[in-house]
Image (cartoon, rainbow, N blue to C red; front, side, top):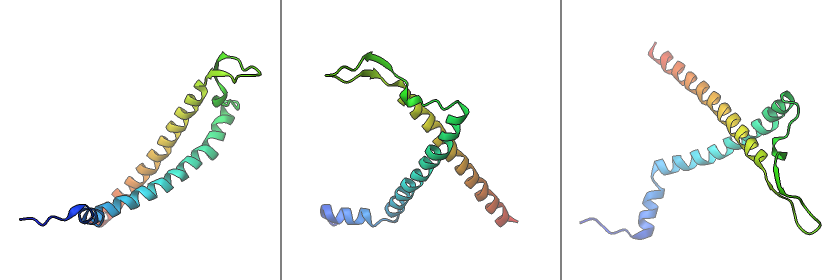
Length: 116
């Protein structure tokens, strides 16, 4: 008959598995890597894109449903923020694709070198 471990015993067994620790490290490194990629897109690619399209700031695009008054704020559909988020997503995905593709090519070259 299997020994009953209890909640904390099961948790200790779960957390001490190698793949859980590897996964945690991957999540932390992924979070840090995400910050680097986002900075690259925001601070380098977006200004270049803005320059190429004439300095358009999509985040300011909106349809005003009700103009602001002295007592109330403007009510608007800010579709420009969506456009900006889509551009950010596409650029981030492109940067990640290029990085992963380069890493896969390096890995394939290393494996090919080991065979020879």
